[in-house]
Image (cartoon, rainbow, N blue to C red):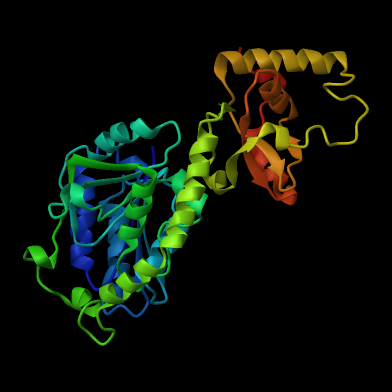
Length: 357
């Protein structure tokens, strides 16, 4: 399970490294953890952040990836989405530069907890932060499936606050919230004695005014959008309960193109040929299909099929027929631009002589 921790940060390079170090020192499998940071290009500490980025590549080499992304100043409600669009994680965690991860093996423990949602991976989880406990999810943890269903990590509409509250509210609407008290990521907040620095003040007392107060008004006006989020995720839960042929290997590079598709909506055997598998198959087609069926029954499907945007099956007709013949409702597929087909075939092709039996 790949975990992506996504963190906008401003004028806190020292806190940021403390955060990174705490994650590095406590996770069980660093190769499965990705850290992405967003830094405004007008940040007073920009040069220090850029130096920290270089330092991290050698100081913390075992992470799957650690990267600082520089960009125009924007609300964290937007920059969290910028980071999410670049991450590879199966699990997305809202990070903060005033957090310290304190539980050894937190990543292993988290994976065990999230297995409770394996059927559809729709959940909002959170750790003990030393302030909110079970009462509030201050740093939400969601799945790749949640993110891709809604097309965003955070709502993108707030000035600064209420991003966590939005996600938590949707989770409560679904009855899919999950507090994990035995994993602690301590929030070293000014309300608990940390200094009230410029980053805190910038969003509360400086020329912008109290952004939390403004965001509370926005939150109260946008319940209908959260209800729409709830309905989309309910549909995802419904799809997840369908019987399906799941691929064992989903290429991280192509993850954004992957989805489960109703096999009855696919346009099968669309290519111009006189010998259709289900109408008048050649003997070798029948033999190959029987061999494929035997392999899937014993070993499952290795790669997703490949489908065009109009639902034509570009690669994997026989696997679609396998689903139909065996009562499976959905199949894992890459939905692609047909002009890019060669790239996908190179990553997914298995010759019929190599079917595992």
